[in-house]
Image (cartoon, rainbow, N blue to C red; front, side, top):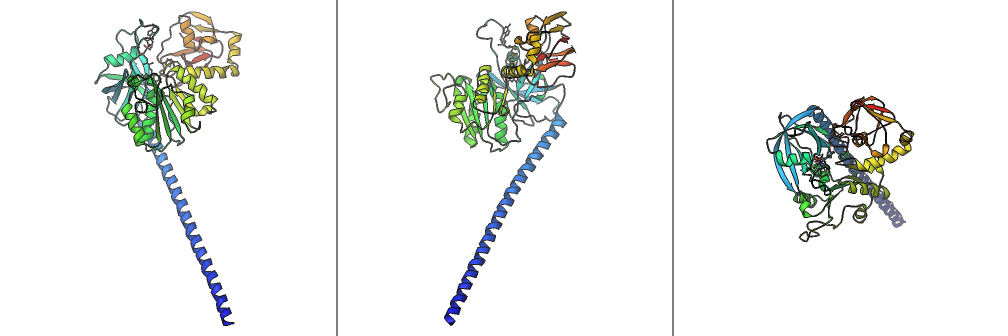
Length: 426
Ligand SMILES: Cc1cc2nc3c(=O)[nH]c(=O)nc-3n(C[C@H](O)[C@H](O)[C@H](O)COP(=O)(O)OP(=O)(O)OC[C@H]3O[C@@H](n4cnc5c(N)ncnc54)[C@H](O)[C@@H]3O)c2cc1C
Ligand code: FES
């Protein structure tokens, strides 16, 4: 009997020990879990605080150091990059700090070129991440078109290459433009540069790595061959030093000396077909800049691949070809063409001309040129403000969002189309 009682007591004791241990370990596990959750929350909180602090610091510095109109900059360094491209490092002549900018934005230059009756305006993308000390632009000397070898080469780009040297003072507008990387996001990105279109995406890539972001980044760079492949060592180092950066160099026409696997990875143009082979999915945000055929094929290809339009970001260095097509399609739906088909006139008062509008020609600037009416232009992409034209009566739509909205009562002729009858001071 005693033995039985002892056995039962032992059994109860064992059960108690098991129960207490269970409670102990469960509590321990939950407290570990609680600690882990608390740590994760703390990390999230710290990251958000750092992001908010950085953002408010950005806004404060931007407001404090930005400028309106033109500011004098001195060329502190001029560095040939190869491939007909030269980088210019610019320091403010007043020695005041530089405002930060969004990676992908550009500077607008006003150049007094001897022999030109008016200042020449041109935009150049900032090709490095924001720095306190300098801005950098990288400019390709533009030759005459292949089918017109006798016309003069590009005015501004060759002026930069041939006439601008260290110590030259330049008039520069503050960084602007809507094509930039959203640095508040951590979503994976694909950055694509074709030829000189490398510059804005280079700024984005530099900022990603310099900020310590772990953002997954696929970088595609398309050129003909090694002769055009600029900033090669820098790009190779970034890929070697940052696990999140995946470099894809495409040569469309490699020479015999170019080594696949070393100089470049793909002997083809950058294309959506290549993305399908290389990327794990289409689930990225895309940023691209390059020659018009590349831009068009990427834009259409990405849409067909099911990439939502809000994930496709691009910039044209010349007339906004992609945007034009896209917006023109949208305009058909909005009834703009119905107005055009109904017929109305565009009146140019300075030139004393009244011409029936033809929507097929393109923008008001294209239309004016077609009719031998002179409107000054710079970028032809709604960025530099050179083509600003006063509207005496009537309204306009925009084929693409202008970089800087013009004042009420005027329009940027290079990207504007009339909504109906219009009278312009041109
Ligand atoms: C937002 C933005 C960012 C940009 N960023 C960069 C950048 O980072 N780097 C860069 O290098 N460029 C950039 N550009 C392009 C740059 O602004 C200029 O468009 C480019 O340098 C060419 O300008 P240009 O004055 O040299 O050539 P233009 O004088 O405008 O000439 C353009 C072409 O026309 C030809 N031409 C001249 N006369 C005639 C004629 N009578 N008939 C037919 N053709 C003729 C020229 O030979 C040349 O091929 C950017 C453009 C924009 C809009
Ligand atoms: S030409 Fe630059 S805004 Fe129109």
